[in-house]
Length: 317
Image (cartoon, rainbow, N blue to C red; front, side, top):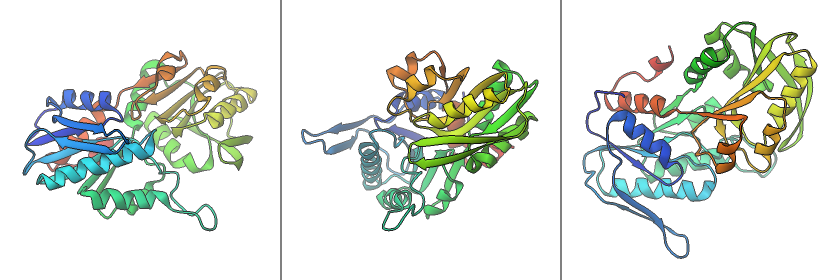
């Protein structure tokens, strides 16, 4: 349990209350009593049921499915806190939805990640705390301090304990994830391989080539978001065809939409390890090939350091 917390309050929306409760337990505090509910027409209503005047308040809310409802909850909770004279409001967003819309993908298309960042700032956030942003430059979309935590320390401890580091090679499922995968490979003193992938349309991918020697190696695929799971499952098949002995996957955010869970269960993956940045559905919990690891301790320690004005980046030294 983290210690040394001064004047911190934590309030939770409805997107991932179990994680918020885990963070509160880690910090040795109680969640702020609040009423976050819907009117008959599904408008969001928020009532803070205790005094927060002059307090350092953290709002825990992943903007996962249903993304729009959860974004509105976050905005309205922060507006309520601002009007209740909270001293500082930190939006704790373990999974930042809309992050994949971080650029103009074609003519006359939005940059929705920037729009959501503007909304969060205008609603009253003084600071943002998130985990493994899809693209690091999204931090620049916010005009307020933004701490982007990494799940790598949680992953490397789990890999060392359950898989070991002998004959290990870390694999990026695409070129865009090389920096993330290299960072974890460095922590584990492992080699690096890359999947050369061509995506014909959104949600579909075709593995073209494996860059690196995976013959006789234990491969670990590393990604930030697993949505359809097509990329990871195709990559696992390609790695096994190149002589890999075992393939595991580690991904921070388990979106797992559509038939993703069934796809993972029928794949060549030994296991898919995800964090609880998004509250797992019953199907995810029931899948024997998917294992969930807790990041409440990581988030709790970062929040403690923010409140005490200590370094957050040193968590990853």
